[in-house]
Length: 147
Length: 144
Image (tube, rainbow over all chains, first blue to last red; front, side):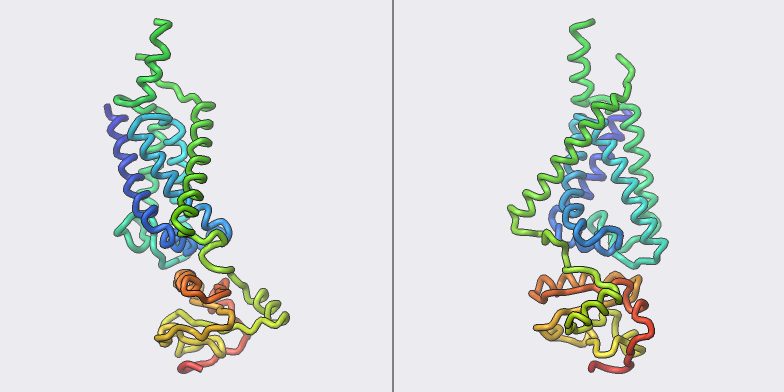
């Protein structure tokens, strides 16, 4: 039960992160360039891919389908966000976060939140989707003939 | 109920599939909705001071645009640079633009994107910002 709840909460967090980015891809690309971490040529692909990655993973987590793969990707994304935000804060960059709608400038809560997301993703990856998940249902279907 | 065990092969395959799907969907959306993000990046390029020297040697006649704000501009700017905040009609057209800020402000990137969107081309960002402009002509005061 608690893993199912964690799965849904993590899905909501990434859903809320993905939708504003998809509504303003240009602004998100700008926000990515402000970190000065990617070469100019790599920014478009990253800015176009990340919101869809978050959205698809969030939807999969809600369904409880391919939970291990989705949570693995979200864990990697969280590590990436954590490193990028720490770098920007250490460099003293006064920039927009580009994380959620309404969250304006980068502050120390941002990498802390990334760590929370990382922990949640790793727990889901390690412990499975919990109740009300397609993965569990499909696994039971596969096991049933042997039982 | 069987205890859960991570199937690494399945997890990696699923992650790879999701990543591929995300890339394809993003690219399709960008083409479908009319290049929300330009394929070569939001601005033309970042230009370092040595790169700029090489460009000048090849005949680059660029216009500098200072986006650090009024006070910093008055205290010292690249010789010949315009103060972006005092250009209601935008910078002059017809010459390549080099936008610079301080090394930590980040405003140069967004203004370069905006100008590129307004049809200025090419628009460069000075890598390292004003701090990289050392031992070079600097002026104080208002617009050139």
